[in-house]
Image (cartoon, rainbow, N blue to C red; front, side, top):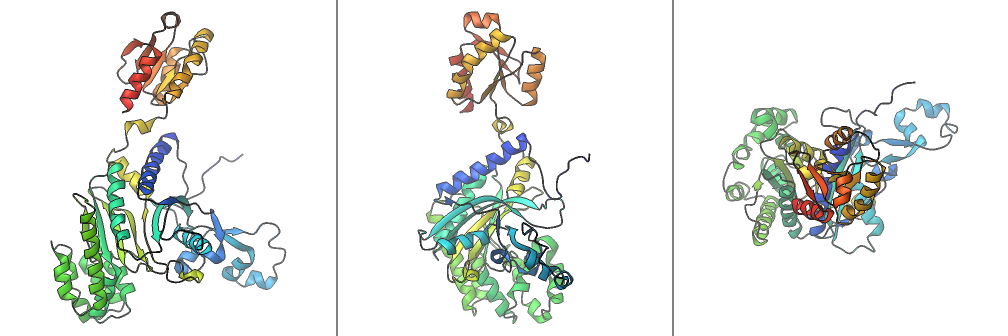
Length: 456
C-alpha cells in the first residue's frame, strides 16, 4: 500500500498554525465589520461561462476545470478527441474552481442587484485555486481576504480603505508598514504626454518593476516593448518624483497639458485631505508614481501595502474599478476594494515574532487524573472553568503524572491543576505554572479569578 501524500501546491495546517491563522482571520474580520462591511460566501466552483475570459488567456489556462460527472466521454467522437484540448474541454467540463473572489463577487452583484442596498460593502474570506506551477511562496490553493464597496464613485471609499489598513495592520502587531498609492489616470496621462497614447498597459507593466529591477532594466524593457527612445527620455522625472517631499506640485507642472492626469492628481489630493479630516495620526501613506500593479481593470486609485524591514514585500493591494460587472452585461457599476495576503501576513508576523502567546495554545488549564476518585472530583469542577470562559480539559487516563505533564507541555498548556486526596479533603487545589514550575494552593473560584486576570 502506497503512503499517503499531499497534492502538489497544497498544505496542511496543524493546530499551532491554525491558531495563528485564525488569529489573523478574526482580527481582519473584526476590522471589516467595524467599517460596515457585510460577509459574503460564494461556491467553491462556478460555471466555466462565468470564469472564462475574465483573466486573460494565461489566467484561463490556470483555471482548475471539473470533469462532468457520469460517462462524459461516451458521447465524444474521434473528431472531438483529435480537435485538441481547448475544444475538448468545453465538451467534458462545464464548471471550474474559483480563481479569485472578484469575479464571483461580480456575478453575485449582477444576480442580486435588485435587492442589494447600494452602495454595497462586502467582505469575503475564502480559498481560491490556481493551476500554477508550485514553488516557494506560490501555492495552488490559498486564501484571499477581500473587502469591496460597489455602487458609488465617492472618494470617501478610497479614504476608508486607507483608514481600514491602518486599523488592521497595527491590530496584528505590524507597526512598520507603508500604504503606497497612485492613480491609473496619472499613468494614462503620462503615456499620452510621452507620445505613447494607448500604451499605458505595457508602460505600467514595465515601470511597476522599478523598485525591483531598477531604472536601467526598466528602460531596457520599455525598448523591448516598442517604446521610442525619445519617449523614454521624457519619463526621466518619474525616477525622482517618488523621492520628492511634495510630488503633487511637480507632477501637476509636468503633466499640466493632460486633463486626465490632472483629474487623477486631484482625486489623490482629495483622498489625502479626507484621511486628514478623519483624524488619522501618523499616516503611513506614500505617493508612488511608479506603482501600477499588473491588473489592467483598475481605473482610479491603486493601492499596495508593504511591510518594511522584512523579506516579504507586498502584503496587500487593490484599487478602484469602473466596470466590475460589465462582462456580465451590466456596465457602469463602480467600486473600490483591497485584498489582503494572509500567507504573506503570516510570514511577516512569524519573522517579527508578533503572534501573542495566547495563540500558541487553545487550552489554558488542564486538570490531572491520578485515580478514579480524583477523576470524578475533577469532572465536577471542570464545568466551572468552562462556564467562566476558560478553555480547559481533564486528562482522560489515570497514568503517571510525568506523562500528563509532558502532554501539557507539548500542547503548551500554561497551567495544570493537581488533585490528590489532600486537595479533595481541603477544597484547595494545587495550581502548577508550567513555565516557572511554581505551585500554589487555591480554591477553584480563586483560580478562575487568577486566570481571567492574566488574560486581560
